[in-house]
Length: 141
Image (tube, rainbow, N blue to C red; front, side, top):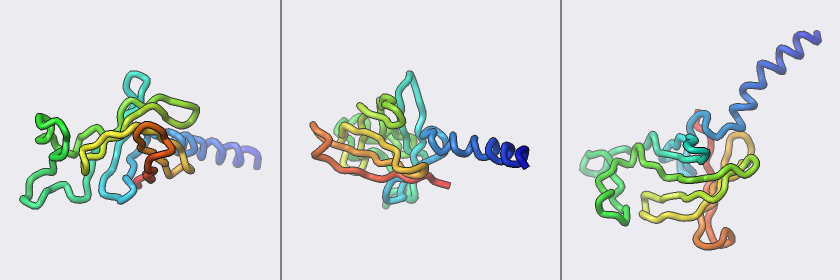
């Protein structure tokens, strides 16, 4: 009986670790219009769009970053676009990063906080965190 309990505990352990690792798997944005893949680079966390529910614009072409304030970047495809940049680990959360909204072309200071093993609360703000908006990302299956 003890062997069975130990075996069961160890078989569940990897899924618990994955649940707490933001870089494992893909994440839906709040509207479920995009899937985001998080990755670490140089000790910081980044996130890029890897899937869109509607990847084509009205003319049938791949969607591009048409609202980017830098005109030289407006032809860049939205799929592959890095929208979360430079987050630093702070306990089990991430702080001091930026989130870019390709719909508006605006970039906001941002934090990422766990809200259970399948949800992230991502807060974008200008200046102080009290004045901002929180969006929820959920794990994609």
